[in-house]
Length: 509
Image 1 (cartoon, rainbow, N blue to C red):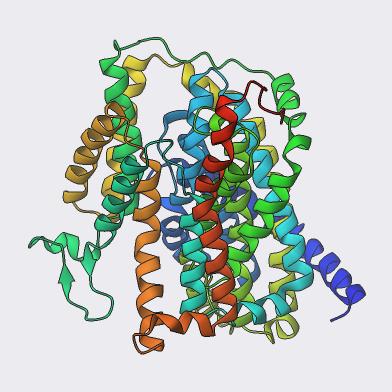
Image 2 (cartoon, helix red, strand yellow):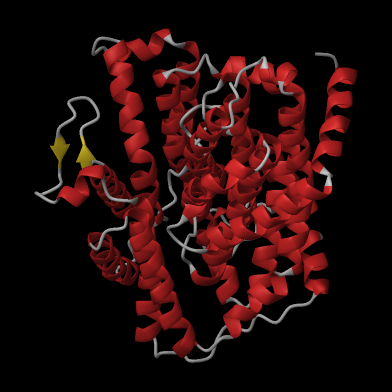
């Protein structure tokens, strides 16, 4: 398919997306998706699944535009509670809490929200362009990634977070092991036997990551605030649209981060079964590794918001690519959408581009429109979102607890999750008091299950021989990159050590 042909089809798709009905559907989907993303535990996947029956009365083109818009809106909305309340609305928003919430506590919620939404827009826009012009070849390349390659990519995600826990290596390792231990609860993926469920039937499906995250970050933060004197006053969050401009002026210095996060997020999204969560963690870790001021991360660094949000949105677009071109979902949300394809009587694959021109190019055109409308919508509402932080703590705290409880229960519709959330809240409070880093635990919990699955599948393919990875060039390259990143903090330590006794100041960044 030539460039002019793609351009012609894109114009056709934009025309389809700009019809009044499809525009209305897109706006409704964005609003609903943003609301779904704000609610912890509900998530974009559940939101798309809940709204799927409503699409039966729509044309396939309008239906996919509605679901895709809900997906975009959920990604935008997930950042709001992460930044304002330290409660990740979505799994991929956890990395946003690391620096987004400290910024909000410093009285800069508008800057954090503006940075999140703007970087999301940029990451999504570039990814949509990549989707438009390179969909078929990228999908074929992604098919060359099997379990060994996926394991190597996930190992790289862990490596990017090396040193995230700060200076205490022992605490970082302990928290990582705790996260990995929690990720083993559920069924053994090879034997099919339940493990670590202690007789609870509810635990056979594993511990939902969102429930743990809500407790660790949300309730833990509230308990700390209460102990610190029950500060009734809210964070001063008054901003104007001039603040938006001040935030945008910072973006030229983050060009490298934006480019890296977009490419990384898009590619991770294209890989089947990965999704936006590993992409956001990996992007945050790389931003910290390559930053001239890594010590600022975790304390309210704007780049720490830009990196994960850019990658999450780019991965969200990338996850749709294998779904449309090959019928292979790149994320759980894409899998739900794929079910819609069959309900609407469509067969995903390369022929879809020629046989269902209106559907495919209407979807691509709606990506451009929904991304622009979505960012205008959420940026317009930034002052409203930021004003939430001015609500007195005595009113806000109970609301957060209620919201968190609803979100935890909605994850699996079981009471046990409320107790897990409560226990996680107490644990989060104690970990923060004892200065144990939460990030390694969360990363290990999120990625542990996927990593184990990829590793065991790889070992089965290699008949139990670890050397099997050496026969896979792509996997070997990622493992080598992981080894370098694991050793990077150690190498930096050796490089800085002689400078301590030297009288010369540290070179300027």
